[in-house]
Length: 316
Image (cartoon, rainbow, N blue to C red; front, side):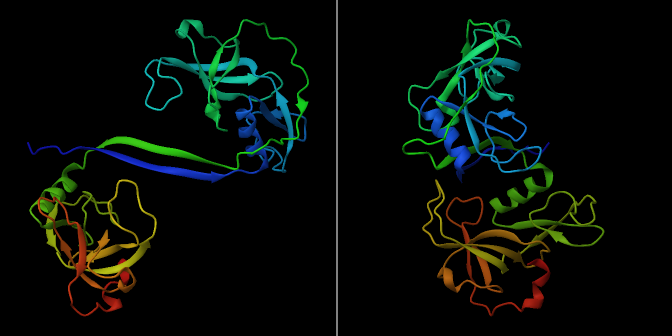
């Protein structure tokens, strides 16, 4: 049995968005221990608030203040919290309809166990000790020994605060284990010996690198291995001007699609050994390996004349 390859991978990036007047007021209000909703044209109060009526699509901005107490409408128990979740002890995910609101807010409930949670139970906000203008300013909900009474009319609010929050940055991260399968395992093993291997489709006869075990055009399995390159042609490219986290490459640099000789699919790689503003379509390049590396570090110009556009136009 060949060795089954696998590796832990992480996809991580900060998601940045600006806030309109409604979302800005909502998040700034949380910082000030105030929960705001928005009233729609039919009189419903939405928490969390949105900028457009989900029924009529009309712009809405009639802000109101609701209570920090409410009722659980549904829940699910989480026995094993994950990294960066609101609590590091078992908790319940809950939908809470705050008093004065007509919709429910998703958050977490701090409870000793699932037997302590029920639909219809009364809860209240537990505010975070340090608040910055984010949904995490609500640390969690906690049980509240109070019967649900007739909610009072939400009080109008002008949404004005000092130093309003105008934008948020949310870190997005996905951790997973990748297993490349038969075709890509053979590709990676060939790279370790400084060879590039693809697979040929038995129907259309195209050679795909990296191979995926099936032809993306015909949908049939591929098994015939074909060595390609190592030289190739830049088909298209982009100039990177933003330095990536944990990547020790000075900007600006060029990332390109490269059609290796003999391949019918372009792969992507960094271009080095040439000023970024001299990289061009049709540039002939070759791989550069570093000591002990299992894959090319980058591609550099070969010094050959540029490839004619007709030679690679189907791979742009």
